[in-house]
Amino acid sequence: MPTLLIWQGFKFRFYALDADEPPHVHIVKDGKSLKVWLQNLEVEQRRGYNDREVARLLAVVGEHRDEWIGAWNDFFGL
Image (cartoon, rainbow, N blue to C red):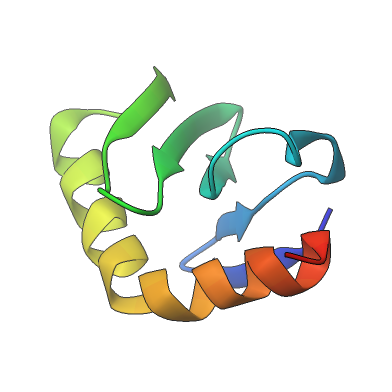
């Protein structure tokens, strides 16, 4: 499970078992989780985060989207 970034305690990562899904990132902290599709920055799954946190996290994902799509492709050999 590659961790792409740790920012203010939030861990941005993807999981090896996610190879058959489109590129996305999981964001976890304190038992909360968020799953975001990298292509369009849509939230696929949300547990525990409020709207303000989601907006902040989406901004961070947007800043790194291209880099993380590249990391996804490298990790999964695409």
